[in-house]
Image (cartoon, rainbow, N blue to C red; front, side, top):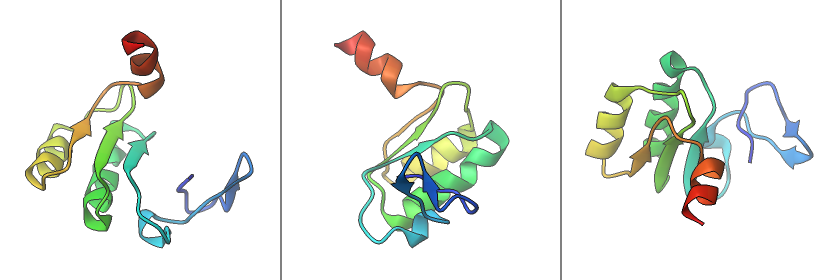
Length: 89
């Protein structure tokens, strides 16, 4: 589901203003933001109890990675899931 403060729907999917507004558990938060903005979303993912955080290709924040992993939440940075799924078969 899309999370964006100004997008109530994205490609027909119900959007939410923030991760905290999502009314059901979230497995993985996939972050499509600039590196300098991404850390706050990793922190929000930890706060809501997400089971994982994924920063897309080109998105790197080492401090956010360390905070997220220290909280016990698995995290991937600078990688695209679509590319990884194809590569791993």
